[in-house]
Length: 338
Ligand SMILES: C[S@@+](CC[C@H](N)C(=O)[O-])C[C@H]1O[C@@H](n2cnc3c(N)ncnc32)[C@H](O)[C@@H]1O
Image (tube, protein in one colour):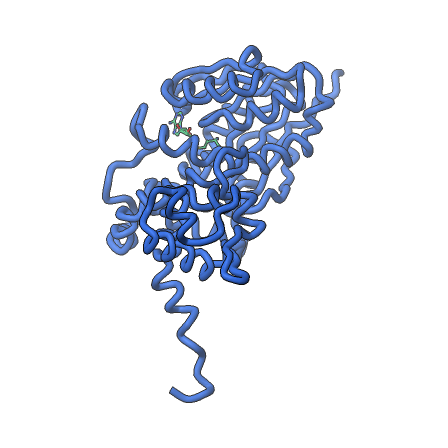
C-alpha cells in the first residue's frame, strides 16, 4: 500500500457497524446511560448498579467511548450531551427502547442480499397482517422520534391558535401526535385510525397525558375503512407513506382530501429524499428497511409526494424540514362562494 492510498478505516467501521448497534443496544438494555446520569462513573460502579459483570461493563464503556456516546476524563466516565438527552430512560425524548428493539431486528438483515436479488421481502410483510404483534413492539419504541416532528407540525399549522378543530390521524400508532397536538390546543379533538391493539396502546398514552377525553379511536385497516366526508380540519399520515406504493398513496391521499373540510390540511410526515436521490443520508439508508419489510414501499422523493398530492386533488403543497423526517403539508384552496 502506498501513502497515496486511502485508509481502509472508514470501510472497516462500516463492515463492523453492527458492533455499534450491539454496544448501544446492550448498554440501553442494562440502563448504562441512566446509571451514568445518576452518578456511576467507573466500570466497577456501573457493574454493581446494573447487576452485570465488571468485564462486561468495561467492554460497554470502551465501546461507548469509541462511538462517541461517553466521555472519559481522569479515569471517570460521563454521558455526552447527546447520550444524556436521548438515551437516559424515562424521558419523553428517550430512544432507549428503540435502541433495545433494533438489536432484535438484526437477524432479519441477513436476508438483505436475497431480498435485493428478488426485489422484495422473503418473509411475511408486517403491514399486510391485521393486529400484527410487530406493531405493538415498534410503536412505543418509535414514539419519541415523532415528538420533534409533531412539535414542528403544530407550529407550521398554528395549532395552538386554531380553536376547536378536529384531527384524523391515520396509522397513529402510539398516539404521540395526538398527545402533542391535544396538549398544544385545549379545544382540539383527535381521532386515530389503527389496529385495535395499537389503539389500546395509544389510549393509555393519552390517558397518561390527561387528554384522553378528547381522543377517539377507530379500529380497522385504513385501506378499507371509510374516512368520511368533510369532517376534519387536519389529517395526518405519519410514517405510513413509506410502506405503500405510489398507487396506494394516491388512493389514500384522495380519500383524505375528501375527509377534510374545505381549506383543511393534510400533513404527511416521512423520510423524504431529494429529487435526484443525492440525499439526505438518513432517508437514503432507510430505503433498505422498506425493501426488507414491504412489498412496494420505499423512500419517496419530494417530486413523488408533490405529484401524488396534486393527483389527489390538493392544490398547495409545501415541504418543511423536521430532521431526519420531512413534513409535507397539502391544502385544497377554499372555493369562493358565488
Ligand atoms: C411506523 S408506525 C407510525 C406510527 C405513527 N404514525 C408515528 O409516526 O409515530 C405505522 C403505524 O401504522 C399502522 N398501520 C400499518 N398498516 C396499517 C393498516 N393497513 N391499517 C391500519 N393501521 C396500519 C401500524 O399499526 C402502526 O401503528
